[in-house]
Length: 194
Ligand SMILES: NC(=O)c1ccc[n+]([C@@H]2O[C@H](COP(=O)([O-])OP(=O)(O)OC[C@H]3O[C@@H](n4cnc5c(N)ncnc54)[C@H](OP(=O)(O)O)[C@@H]3O)[C@@H](O)[C@H]2O)c1
Image (cartoon, rainbow, N blue to C red; front, side, top):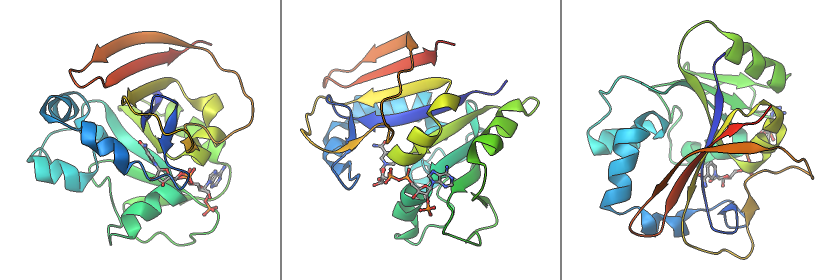
């Protein structure tokens, strides 16, 4: 079974950005040590234009071969004129309003999102599936999430967009690895307890 892995940047108080989802205040923690970690451990989870700027776009995928994101997150790229932000992966965008896909590599999922994700997870072979966010799609897919990779930065927002846009829905996870950085950032990987 391929895993659905939610890889997300968040604050100490569990927000993925301000109330509009803008997480740029966390960029200050992207120092050399942290960028080096992203380049070596999570290169598949980086957008293609960032991989290009790091000179690593030629790398073969080793952890993920598919990405799924919500329409609002996809629109962050669209506003920059980028229609295929994860061109090194198969891309799915959940949306009931977007209509036709603006790029041949991007599949729009309008109906039965859970069923589509279950079908992806059940495919033979291949790598895992990256859930890139944002909050609402993560809430919609919480039941399907097998792994959390939480990049948490030593910053309190006080108010903002939660990691999961859902109501009370208790799910238990088990800590699988923890990496601490000199600047106080942590990357915690959790597996779903089923
Ligand atoms: N900190 C981080 O690492 C990180 C990572 C990713 C994103 N973000 C931020 O998150 C923000 C966006 O998050 P968000 O919660 O507002 O939106 P989102 O989850 O990215 O997208 C929500 C949209 O996805 C579609 N959708 C959700 N559930 C669906 C379902 N069951 N079936 C079909 N379509 C479904 C709907 O699109 P339609 O309305 O078109 O139907 C919905 O409006 C952005 O600002 C982004 O920058 C942060």
